[in-house]
Amino acid sequence: MEYCVFTEPQQGATYDTQRVFAQAAERLGFHGFFRSDHYMAMSDRSGLPGPTDAWTTLAGLARETERIRLGTLVSSATHRHPGILAIQVAQVDEMSGGRVELGLGTGWFEAEHRAYGIPFPARRFDMLEEQLQVVTGLWSTPVGERFSFHGAHYDLTDSPALPKPTQPRLPVIVGGGGPRRTPALAAAYAAEFNIGFQPETVIADKFAGAMAAAERIGRDPATLRLSVALTTLAAANEVELAGRAAAIGRDLSSFRGDTNICGSAAEIHDKVERLVELGAERVYFQIMDMTDLDQLAYLGEEVLPHLPA
Image (cartoon, rainbow, N blue to C red; front, side, top):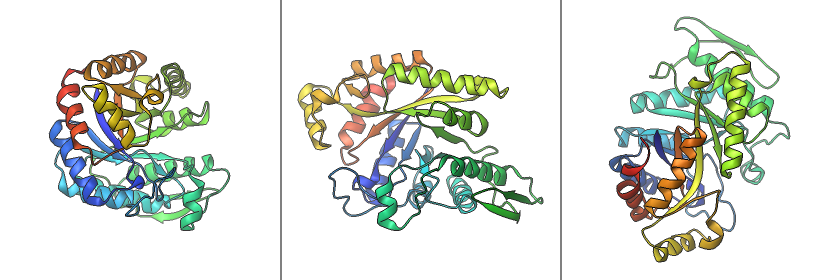
């Protein structure tokens, strides 16, 4: 089992806030630091001081961490041309010594696209599939050979397909709740299938769909890692827990339930055990308040050592 932290910096976080959080997560023994790829705050948050670019941030963290894995959950296919994305990710992988993972999805937040002039086509699954084909194709092309791709959305001719990632096969993550195309894309191109923010019955169903998609194309399902991302509140007592819920604009009573990770070390242990029984091999604790380093320390010191290995 692997345990990662997952953050949402667009809600209001500087690079330094993310750096301090990621370095603390590394010291506490978490396997990875992952962040969203958004350019505008959601709900009623001001987003001050403004957004930080995901891959620029990860490039900085690559030089300011030593062990922890770094990645997006997930980058939007609408935000970058796949040829440029392949270069960016490969470069950050080299800067980190081979610790990078690329989560890639269709993108969904139309308002941020309008706000920053980013095209937001109505149909994006074909775009995502072509991006996966281009990025993985560029990375897998042998050095000295050329890569060409001619699709409906992207056209590459005689690319030198450089640079290469440091990792022989940089992990790609594909996730989402789509019943057919999402698991098919994960089976065809990804090292990991992720489902987020769903109750346990839905998680079980989506895991089964991903495994079936792998079998349909002749891939060993055991080679497709299954992961789950859930919003997390952790504390030793109810008073602290209620305070942490209020800090992120949530009511504790409504936050509790089958969808989120919430409670004491014992409660979180029980929740994670159930996720493992469903097939999860990696859990992302989505932490909304990166300034609450005490919560991160509680997770790392009181929860993490007792979770299933």
